[in-house]
Image (cartoon, rainbow, N blue to C red; front, side, top):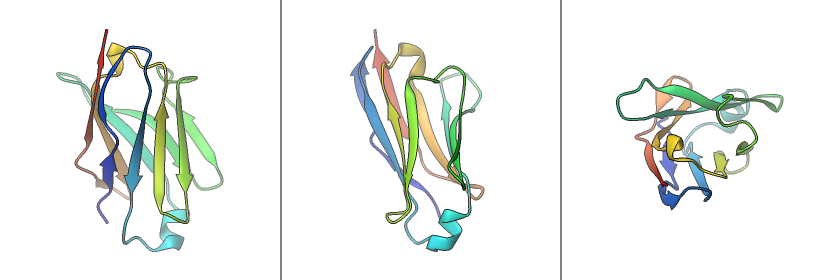
Length: 113
């Protein structure tokens, strides 16, 4: 099952965006029992883990986004969201959803100063 990301765009610093990751076709029990990760990759930089949502409502964030990003999952819709607020130019990157070792195509987020 390949994740499908959406919701990227261009915003000014201080703005907000909500990214979505759809895991169409995955069996619900598999979705509920696996971690879903959001990564990002900025130009010239390595891909980095931004947020994870694991079974049992265990959530982790990179230090750089704590207090600004919120990850949530809608199990019924097999979707995971990444709500991003107070965006900064350093948040500019392609954001990827990762599930069960599968990667989506990514969605571009551009934050201008």
